[in-house]
Length: 361
Ligand SMILES: *Cc1c(COP(=O)(O)O)cnc(C)c1O
Image (cartoon, rainbow, N blue to C red; front, top):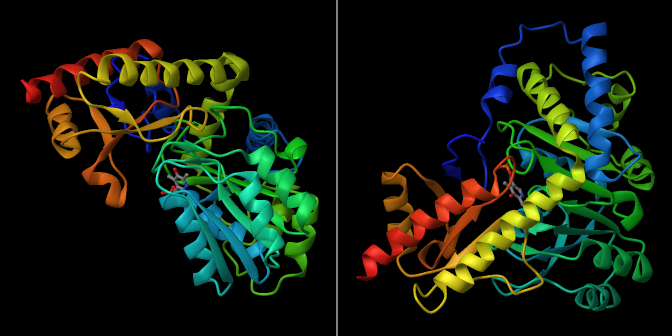
């Protein structure tokens, strides 16, 4: 991508071609043109989730998908796995929709193991478990396959996964892993503007949803499913974003999922190597997440004066993320996802090294 300067961990940089696709004129949303567009989109979304189930395109940011997940996918007792701010958001949504929530909380920078989940499920009865695959606030990657297996073996609970910074950047096998619901958003690894959430649900979760009262109107998974079969959406969709999505999914298919995943792995490796080799002793940088539990899309770096670093970089035209919430005093974050390249990222890391060195000398 030409002149890459925007490395926020969401929204991520959107290519000009994708932005241009939004200039497409409006079409009637109950029409053959709409159905053609949606059928193409539907078919191209499924491989990203590793599912043969429908993937619903929801108007709203990723949190709307999380609320749909909780409203339509949980009954009463929720076990929330919290490794950071977004795991906590899932827990809060469950509380705000009247569920009883028990949290398993990890230290910042740590993941929750399948064994911890097994133990929690042995000590309480839950109908639902929520978790985040790639915790964008800490850069921690959790073991969805292992946790899904633990949930299935030790309970009848359904597993809802926030995969907002993972789907589209790394392998995700919803059906093979036995995940009941997956949510992602448009503005992270899919490198689209914000405004769309994507939700896929297993058949057993869909059956649970149908029996649940109080699903509401705008985020009703059952309505979305009805309209999915007609290749439409229950309410007026964000048409401009759908045109951008159509373009981006075609480009992702051209790149190939394996190449896309490899590129993300290489960008992550380049970031970690830079911290450990250039940044370690010299610049006193450290990766917050432990080796083996790091997300390929976002790295939280512990450093001195992170707010100053973020500000100074922005004066030089580069945008990176500050630390999330309470972590803003000790960490900064680099989003290495979407359509970024290893070369573009290395240019950023070069500038960043110079900026940090300039403060220390
Ligand atoms: C960004 C993000 C969200 C929330 O996304 P919104 O689009 O702002 O609602 C949820 N979970 C994770 C892991 C995220 O990175």
